[in-house]
Length: 379
Image 1 (cartoon, rainbow, N blue to C red):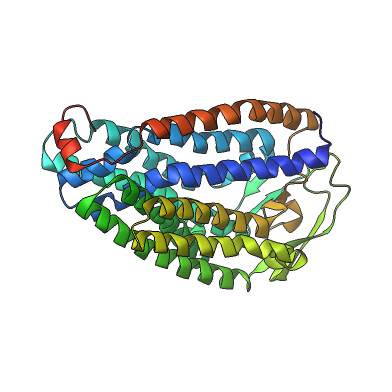
Image 2: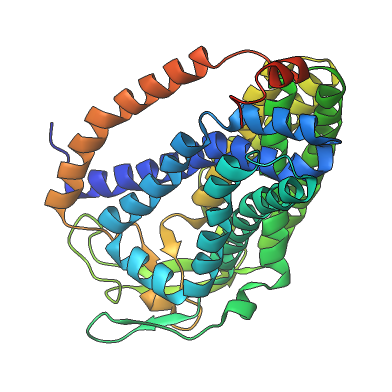
């Protein structure tokens, strides 16, 4: 099965999006539990219950993040080189925060000392909350443009700073991301626990969903007043291009151009709202599986809402708009994209099948009695 170059570019834009969505849904509930750990866990047993709802599979879910990074490297090498070098300190912050997760899960319950365990609880919180915040901040900066330019040899030069990334709009997007993953974690906890802890998880989910709806609405209103990017002219997008072969302009409200051109796309943000509201209804009525599915649907739609608005831009440049990287001119060669597609078609169903089987095996409630009875065997 062979596709033309243009179709492959579109397919890999979608596949990278699928990996990011998979990360938000699968690793998102792990991180959501970590974010809620010091908030909902009233004693050590509560916190062990929370940890053991996700401990058997958190490391497998982390692979979604690693695979997304690898896919960006292979499919969009310009984007990988520019973003990972320009936003080096932000990515290093994420990396250092993620260090707390494996050691936190493994060593937290090795000693009975309360101070030892509290320290690792906060480490797990930082390892979950910091990446969630930074990922949202990164998306916020994409909508404003990233300060980089390219020279005639296609070398990228980043002219911004780490602190400039933490601007008000980007921090609002960070709140969207935090509340989204907190909702995902709360619905997962509500489904996997019982008793008082489940009741607290349901209440936390209602709060997280409310914050998500408010911050997502505020972000959409803010984006409507931002100067977005629009391609003025570009050669045949089905050919081999470099980023400087186009002309790009900026217009207020341009990020809504795709939605204005295709009215059906408004269903995407509508699904984000519907998912959050349905999750709230499920939590309120004790329909925890429905709440988790609805929360996952909201994760999908929130990320896709941003992707549709940005398309075809992947990494807009605020200092040299024509150097903005897009799905048309920042991709690998035709052969690379084609070979990668075959690999994805072979291994993705295997990964999904194994993941489904693993979650089926680990289904069921994690209770205080279960943790007490297996004190030496569990995290």
